[in-house]
Image 1 (spheres, rainbow, N blue to C red):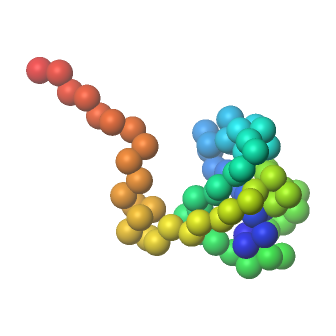
Image 2 (image 1 turned 45 degrees about the vertical axis):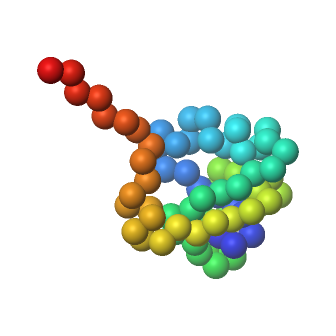
Length: 74
């Protein structure tokens, strides 16, 4: 949400919450930004107190995230 409360999906839950809580400055790049109060408090993985900045991605930016590089050998 806009206050920085983060919810991760699937494998992103492995180390992202720990990294967000350990950093001095945490910038969250979010695909979906909701209003405060829309998230169930029991589902929040990182409370907003650990997040200093929230950057909302446009749908085009979210679809074009290049996280992994595919290498093909012939």
